[in-house]
Image (tube, rainbow, N blue to C red; front, side, top):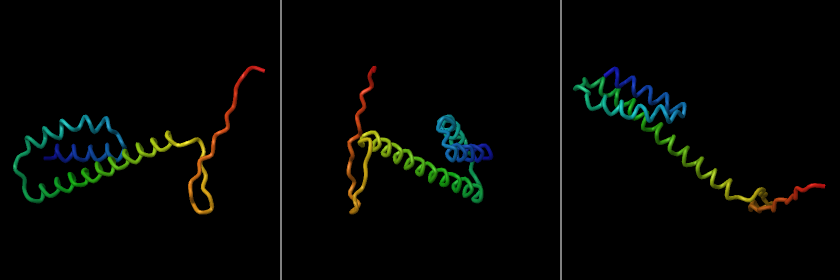
Length: 104
């Protein structure tokens, strides 16, 4: 069980650090540790459940962050170069100046 707890803690650390490569490496190890888990006492089972639920919340938060970043990136790349707001809070796009670069 200590091995499983260590793996859950490593997953937490990787989630907090945003280390997706480390997470992908832990997946198979966590699966193997769960499959070979012996029956547990109630206190140990509750401790593992708390850690697993903590990691599930962190995974959900990470997913929300990735989606927000993806949406923001799409918004930035699709938007005109410059936007401003009028006194009523309406967004207005401003045309970007064009510059011709040439030899003089």
